[in-house]
Image (cartoon, rainbow, N blue to C red):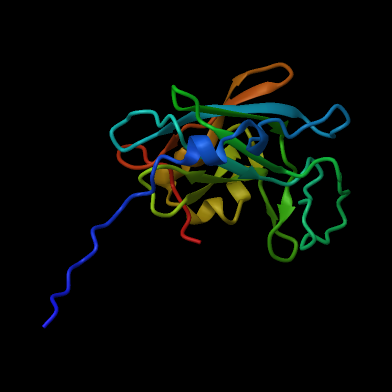
Length: 193
């Protein structure tokens, strides 16, 4: 009679830095000199459940251009497409847990019918210790159309602030701060996709 044993659980190992965060795999700067729209810089920290910054996480973003169109074949909207602006970026966190992107503030995109979404950026985080990546959205705290965004309105009022990037400086580019807390107090609201 053979005896069955359970396999111990494993967390995702520390392979992000040597494999996925090579210089040729990161793309923090999404804009070029001719890219339309308001130039912004997004920066923040990825923080674990103990409040400690994570020094080898990956943050990926996906966004529409300034006109509100994604550089993807599924987006057949009438807004202009900018082939040089892919809307995708990847940043690793540094030894202090900090990540950053230079991009543009996205335009509003359609939801259903005539309803529009507020400018937002889709954010995915990969990190050691996470068996599955987590997905959230970054909204801009100073954006008036947040009040009508159909997705943001689905998030409980007490958790919405965790999705808001706060403008920290004026000028070009404006700097927005968006910390991502993976669990615990002030945990970022994540979406179950």
